[in-house]
Image 1 (cartoon, rainbow, N blue to C red):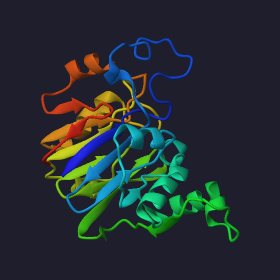
Image 2 (tube, rainbow, N blue to C red):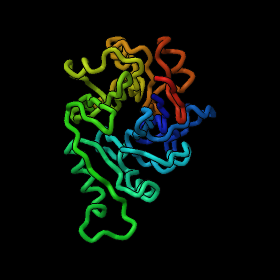
Image 3 (tube, rainbow, N blue to C red):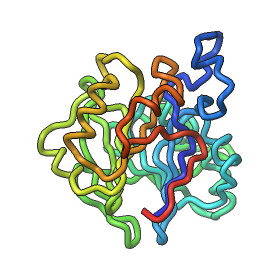
Length: 254
C-alpha cells in the first residue's frame, strides 16, 4: 500500500489569508499546507479521502489521472468543496465517480451540489454515484474498508481503516468501542490541529496521549493549522515513532 498526502492543513490552510504569524510566514515549504486529503493506492484500487477546496490543485500536483472512489469523512466544506472537479475524472474514465459517505453527508452533497442531481442537467455537469456507508465493513472491489466512528465535538465523523493503516481526522473523542478498530496498526494518520485543546479537536497533548494509548507502529500527523507549532518545532517535540506529515509526502510499502 502507498499513501500520498495531498494536503495536510486544516480548514484555512497555511498560510492563512492576511496572517503574518511565524508559521504562516515560514520559508519552510513543509509549512505550506493545502486542505487535508490523502491518496491511497492499495494495489487494487486508488482512493481519495476527502475532496476539499484544493482538490483540483492537488490532483494536478500529484499528476493523478485515475481514482476509483472518493471517501468522505464528513460534510464540512474543507472536506467536500472540491467535488465539482470530479468531472475531469468522468471524462478520463468515462463513468460517474463513486462517492462513499454516510447518509447525512450524502444528503449534504445533494443539497450543496443540487445541479448535479437535477432532472434537467446542464451539459458537462459532474456525474456522481453516491454510495451509502454505515458503521460496518464494506467492500470496494476486493478491498475491505472499516469505518471508525469518531466525534468532532458532537458531529459524527468517519475515519477509515484499510488493512493495517487507518486515517482519522477532525477528532475530539473516540468511543471505547471504536478504539478497538484502531489496534494493531502499522500506520495511523491522525489529526493534530493545534497546540491547545479545542471544543471540536484534540490539542497536541491529547493527540499524543491518544497515540500512546492506541500504540500504532508509526503515526503521521495531519490536519495541521497555523495555531500548531511549525514543522521543525513540532517534529522536535514528538516521540520517535510519530512524524509530521507534509504536502506531497509519500509513504510506501505499508
